[in-house]
Image (cartoon, rainbow, N blue to C red; front, side, top):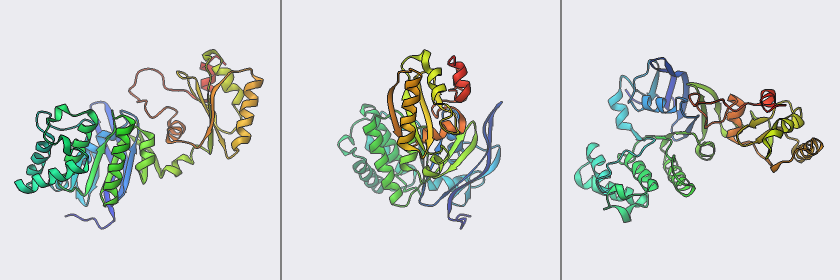
Length: 341
């Protein structure tokens, strides 16, 4: 039976998944209202793709439940598949076929008649600015064109719910901007969208609500502004070119606010949350660094980003995975100790 009557297009409760000794999902919960965008944010290995694969019936959960438009993804898998579209991390297209042939085949798999499948293919090729290349083999397409074709394929059957798993990975800034515009158009037309991404600005730009996942667990949820409020106001940022003076710089600005500075040992970048003190705190940072005779570059005052949020929540950057070799970024007094303070 479909239609849960709650206004939620996607409902996830206590979802768990293991792969041997790896606990990929540790009982996550979230909901996506119809006609909205949920950004599932986290580093590689956080569990985002595992969650999407369960929601799209490609994996069976070990615990909890997931419902799409009132249909349980395990008990009603066939009904769920008829409702959704999926564009994964890699373009799932047949490179030997033309762009039009790729879309026509998808249409026939969804039981569209030959004429209707062709009409839908032409419509989507035009919409995604691929019409001039419609009769070229997909293997001759650029990476951005292949991603657009893959997204077009996910829309052939007019899905009520669309899953985009890191759709702009590998695209240049222009390609990413173009994909964002397409996504906005889909949402404006009433499509419910779940978007996984490592790109913090992508979630900031597109999502109505954001769920942050780290190591298989939800560590925060809310709007972009609500999450940014966790950082504690504006951020002063600067770089210390001389790595040997990084500890001195952090020590100089420590205590400026309640939170400790964040430090990136590799780049020498230091970020200090300053609350609502604005230019007053900026001047104080300059004064303290000057008194410590620490040379800096790239001093700026900015609004907090979702990257700052992830650092505040986890102590490491969003692009870093728990499985990534090497130490995570350190913060606060630990950073000062490791920098030789």
